[in-house]
Length: 526
Image (cartoon, rainbow, N blue to C red; front, side, top):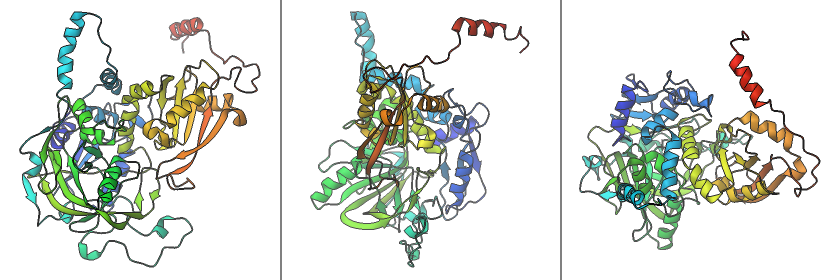
């Protein structure tokens, strides 16, 4: 089963030998992130990685979860890298394997009705369970044991700086451009050094007048005692909600939620279909609805079991320079104007733990959350694209740059049809390179995929370039959030797909002989 709160999760990781307490004092300014970066590239303890056969190299990394007990400038401990391995993500989601959870998702989105009356009666408990997934509002919760409004102060939180030029000058992070002679956007008088970011919080918003809650995981740059900057890309629901408020000239209420049930960080990162609530999905993962409590100063509800909640209002028109920020692409995303956030309350448990993360060149903590999504959402993607057998988002693609896709080819240009379908499937629209291979190719073996690209592709005949939306963070795109994408058809070519010569058979040993050799291997002294 998933864990009811962050501290229970941490305690179990420690019991399993998957978390280390650090009792020496550490600096939240770069030092915590440098330690976490190094730890995320280290091997997991023996047997603790939970690496699947499809990822024998990167899946064995991730090191340990970390709990820093003494953080300079704050009395609150910091947890980081607690989701930083396949095994730890599976524990957080309460599943034995991502494939088993994918089967549950498939039954939820496309249930097979049983043919008999007895079968229908057996389904009743499962249907009753589904009714318990929506969130439930309760009167009180751990997250409000301590309430600070007038004395709310972001400086009391151990907010980290991840990379050296975070919150600095664009000129420092752009090759060949001199830094401008001007001070950091954060004033030293606030007591917060430049570039402190909240990185592992669920950001809760709702459209005006209520409606479905949205939970996203967006970075928040802390700029002062009660001030921050709300960073949310135009494609996200949080930005859509803000546009609705801004059109009315009203500030938008926002809650920044740290901790809670162990399924919540994962649910906040999921590319769910439109109008599917992250809290409903979290309840499904949790096996019961997430309990919520009303905020103290804004009209939103937040998880009762959270560690820390920051309440505030996002201005409809006031903007500040946000960034640069060292991102999951392995590069700094550049500074841009985003809307100001005014903090009205900070509530927390009596002895809270502050969860955070660092993103950058993988593998890092976000890599394992992303790979979980790749496996768990395969049934949903197959429902949208029935041709799809399997897919793989390779680590070097930073999730949006590459997708390897396997199909059972049955007609000419089927690979191109699949490419178009993927570019039309939610956040898969950001995929910059799609490689389509035949069903006998292992998409999780990157060398196998590249072998078939080299063997089966004529660049003029078998590639297609289209224009469309791209990830906002793609610095190679000629325009922000827009540019070109390439599809590569690495399947065997058949008549009707342009000029196709006789196609040879790929080398493969006789299965009977291979089996005989395997039986005789020890006999042969090998």
